[in-house]
Image (cartoon, rainbow, N blue to C red; front, side, top):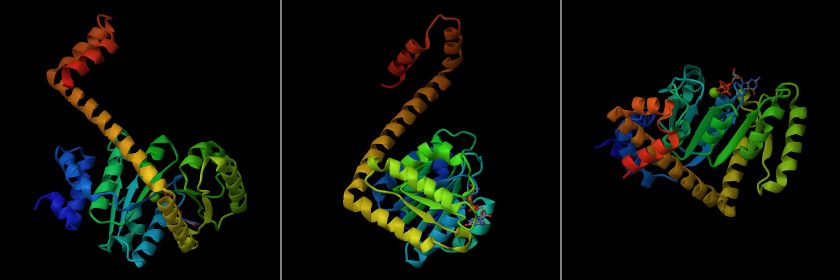
Length: 312
Ligand SMILES: Nc1nc2c(ncn2[C@@H]2O[C@H](COP(=O)(O)OP(=O)(O)OP(=O)(O)O)[C@@H](O)[C@H]2O)c(=O)[nH]1
Ligand SMILES: [Mg+2]
């Protein structure tokens, strides 16, 4: 059996190998994705993002357990754009998610940058597709931070949860522009700490101002993830959002938009890769750089000529 057949038959080893192939840009990655693409599109993908240490992994762990109790299979992708490490779960997460890793209905995988941020969002969404094809019904993508790369990463999600904690101070002002747009649900975790009311009021105010732009008014949930408080309510909200997405037609719209974005991103990546590979192989890169530096050629004409030469 080839890796895709094994994966479709439920082999965790094949699932792991397929994601490694994507991550390391192995030659076989492309054909793996080609073969499993028809089996994707079934999972509900939940993005969880927020500042470092907000409790994203703890929340994911608790939510995953709830979904398991409801008989759903779960995939978890922990993305850390600041870490070069990947492979199995990161040590800290592995300890916290110990029970989950013993459960064959859960597959956990962490992904780092391996030195470059480029392509991480594409790889993350491929990893989610692989888990989807492997039959995982609920897929969590946990990513730290609220910068542009995280925004790109959570684009692969159907429901995005932004996790905040009290006591962030002025940080909330700095991050509000980005998070308002991407959050379908907001969580104030560590609700056992001071400053919950203030943060809640601030968030509600910002969401009210933003309300005319969106059909779905994101709810603000309070949780104490470490103690499992508020998890049932959060799960209810996630399911409410899922129903909203389906019934309003928003899910179809988002998926069309995502298919378009992904097609264009893939095209861009492949064009750039092909041309770069051929330039490297022919050894003309250094020559062209020198020639541009000496103003014998300009980069614009060089790029036009390269595309003509290599794209047909
Ligand atoms: N007091 C309190 N601590 C919590 C709560 N939720 C999580 N923690 C603790 O906060 C710490 C960080 O939790 P994580 O779940 O690792 O947070 P994270 O957002 O995944 O962290 P990174 O992935 O490193 O960004 C851990 O020590 C948790 O036990 C909570 O509701 N209240
Ligand atoms: Mg974490």
